[in-house]
Length: 413
Image (cartoon, rainbow, N blue to C red):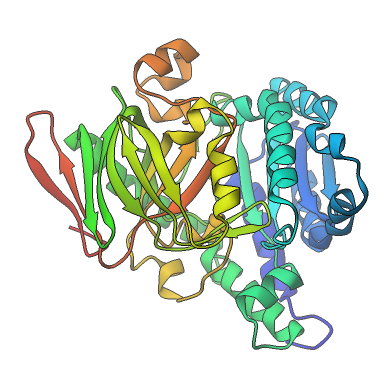
């Protein structure tokens, strides 16, 4: 490490290669639509190089910038916060319909909007979610191969490591990203193949048991999550509708499926903060009745949480349930990343909002109405938050009511 280059260039190049060869498995002739903050330009350039080596037709980056985002909140008229560039997302949807791959780089400052008006944040998020719907449907429907990886924004690094000088904080966060992404080894592609095989063993066991519900118990939590009719568990590498097997999330430690949107009851408390669009939401506590959140509170960011729950009818219901052991490599670091991509892979979690069609048996051929009939949720949002810890037990409940231990004290039983 040097003061001028706190990010190891060899590992950064491996991350770019893994994003293309494992995350996307980009095929010759495919276009690649890539979104990233400007700060992640070094990784974007390396990804583009690997994508073209893999035969990409066109790599099209779309950049965002923190100062431009903040200038909207400082200077824009009120009506600006009800607007979004629908033309951009319609273009992305058209690209996906033409079999373009999708890659996102997560490198935002988690607290970028923490001091901004929650009403403006909520309105902007809702407008963007509505405009993004055409593109999002291609992703949640798993029409195309897609992937998300991360890059160490200095402001993010200082949040994670507040006591370190900026360069050292960036170095430490970069190393944590590289380790979680399995690029700190000589052959990361082989490491990912082995990891995908382990995840497959987990979801194969869960699918074999075909539980009708999961019951969670622990401090602040007594929650029963019914599972959707015809649900299936997944994790790691999966085949998209275009026939390409990809790893959508890097890193990933989860196996996940679709809950039944109308069969969730009880109360649950979050075990890690949720960083949502620049706001930190901490100590979330909610109560479910017949699948719907009927009360919610948080010690920090509650106003933003309540605005999220007002997004639409589906925003108060679950679209995903995921199991992650407390001893996962990300959890074992002891680092709170303030980034859902990492923190969700340190603990079992649930997601408010949109379900994934591919988490049904034959899901890629089901219509939206058929998915809804089976219990799948529909919403403009999909927000994961963490409810697992070393104090949480999970039982699987069979169709006959029998209980099978799934996790004890956060570990696979």
